[in-house]
Amino acid sequence: MKANIAEKVLADDIEKVLLSSEDIKRRVAELGRQISEDYKDKDVVLVGILRGAFVFLADLIREISIPVETDFIAISSYGSSSTTSGVVRILKDLDEDIEGRDVLIIEDILDTGLTLKYLVKNLSSRRPASLEICSFIVKECKQSVAISLKYLGYTVPNRFVVGYGLDYAQRYRNLPFVGTLKPYVYERDEI
Ligand code: IMP
Image 1 (cartoon, rainbow, N blue to C red):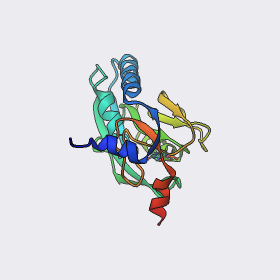
Image 2: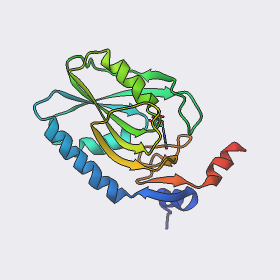
Image 3: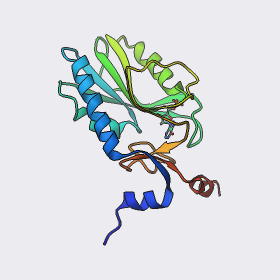
């Protein structure tokens, strides 16, 4: 029998599953219902931050029952694979003009908050009617800048996590759950 790749990675590299795919599905459905309620009669654009938020956004829009548009912004933050430096560069800008629109930023994870701080400042200058944030995960006790979230999926301990769109060195995004990596994964990459 062919081994499932997620099971193979789970067995090899995952230390602990923090959010199961069942938990995630339930929570994403709740968020979708809430957003549908809050944004009915609004002209909403969901702005996904690439690359990490693409999995969350793909699931979330299918739980939203009102008309929405989606757009993407791709950013790169300088730093190593597991830390953020706060210096952000736009690799791909939005395709659409957001002036006068109700913009909801869809982010995968809020760590120091520096990436979102930059994005909020940048997108605010384009004069949207409203600008709010929905982050799938927030790390406990880590934010170095205050970011106000309208929607939050989960709070997780201050550990580096992978899966459900989140990567380490561009891998593990395809895991259907969120977990921590065994230490040897980082040690292996240092060699
Ligand atoms: P911040 O600017 O420190 O809030 O970091 C936000 C970005 O860093 C996220 O959009 C992720 O791309 C990345 N990041 C932060 N923590 C993690 C993590 O635990 N796993 C994977 N990526 C992370």
